[in-house]
Image: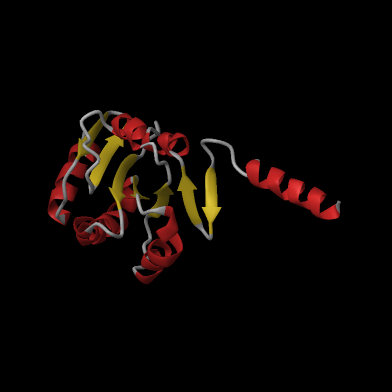
Length: 166
């Protein structure tokens, strides 16, 4: 009887652990479903946001990631926030994503998107997005632009300047 009660208690705790839209913590990695991530894609304050969708298995993403880190360092004092949204598979968080973040000493905020309903959330990010990565959004209270491409550092800075120099 004790085993049954304990099993039911554990089952209830597991089932109630997180509500839709909440972030789950996975050893300092914020993991969101799209409802939880969406507010981070639509903040309305005095900052300019650079949001990059990437994954450790995406070679072009890995190639450009240092540029986002450099942008984070160079423009943090100019009210720019870089958010790196990992699309790595949940089973790879411990083996690939977290070690990559640690090994590369990523200083930008990194969150993981764990929402298998891509057909629903991809067009909510941008109606023209095919789902290919890398993909980036730059936005602030006066505008928003979506890019389905890789960047050099110079290209990234040039795009960012159109937002912060207005």
